[in-house]
Length: 285
Image 1 (cartoon, rainbow, N blue to C red):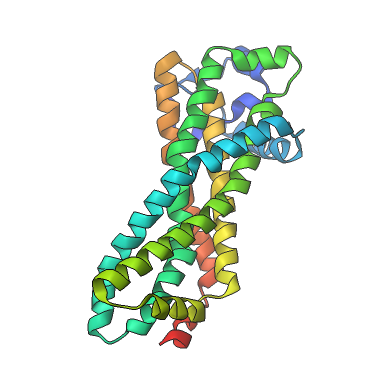
Image 2 (cartoon, helix red, strand yellow):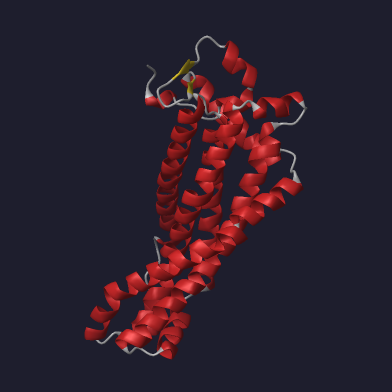
């Protein structure tokens, strides 16, 4: 049994035939092929470069864009609305008792723009779209449809992976912006109806606290998260082995690793963007 550090979900792209002929490749319990560590970095870099430089199939890209964007709007907005109301319940009453009513809108705006909207939206997309990518490509892999693409002269990366990466990186920022709007609206309505804080006060406080960089950073974060979700899910999907069991395990692994990658990237980006920030609420106190 190879160690977990040798797990290589993107070996497929470098040479599909080499997986069949290389005697050092072994099939692990998780249904994936294992490759030497020295080959892993070079092949992973090859996948990323090939995805960025590959031929764009615009018809496939538009289909995936519709799938990731408009068809995911409903569940993303619903989730954002309830997350916003739950977050409001947690702190508005405490702020009211401390006499900080005019800071409620600023706190909501900063929390949603910097963290809640991009992260919550990406989690929903990872569960809905990431799992679909992995399952779909995994099924194509075990049924040898990806080999058929090669026989027909099509590159699986260009035809299957690149459209999904482009669609995810384009759709996530707009989904995040809509989730930010709905989350703020639901929070303001709850604060007004339950805690008696006027919507006008909340909106004025939010306007004073928010800066253009807060919105831009949220869109940058969501774009990075979209690339993580699509690349991880596609990589696990096209390296699936072991039939239906392998498809299920690949789907689970793709979602879990995508979520971990989102949280790690969120910490790194937040540290870079906001490590020196600390005076945003002064304008709304």
